[in-house]
Amino acid sequence: MMKLTEYEFQLFCRGVATADERFLDRLYESGCDDAAVFYKDGYLCLEFARRAESAERAIVSAVKDFERAAVGGAVERVEPDDLASLSEIARRVGVTRASLQKYARGASKVGCDFPPPAQNIATSRRELFSTAEIMHWMLRKSRVDIPAQSVELFQAIANINRALAVASAQNDKDVRRLVSKLQARSAHPGLRGH
Image (tube, rainbow, N blue to C red; front, side):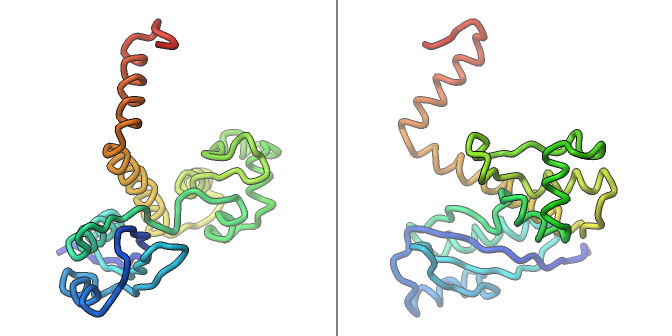
């Protein structure tokens, strides 16, 4: 029997107008008895402390349990988001913001291959980095002792959020049209602008 680990995460959901008693009962019966339910910024949020063999299994089972209970509801994203500022990642990892900034600027021999920002690159004031990538980098460089469970959780959240975005985009005809164009372009490297 595999060892179960507890993973803490939140699901941000749409398509549920009210969390009345009947809906809460359906959530409980579908397996979401380990979640606190609240509304935030227009989203129905479920905060889980779920035990599973892996972070991915914990999150995927929570998504399935929610969607089984919430007819017409869908999970939009999982948090804490993998993408975060260096300040937030420093807090998550237990190091100073200054040390991560030093690595990111390449002001250290150790930091020459520091993971680049993933978003908001043009607006350098609020660059977002992948928590999982930085955790992996710090472990490779022996810069800090990070629990394997934390690294696994942020990697699972990053992967699942990408999968949720892809699944959601498949329902958008403009996105499907653009994907088709981009795939045609990559299949024919000489083809540009068509």
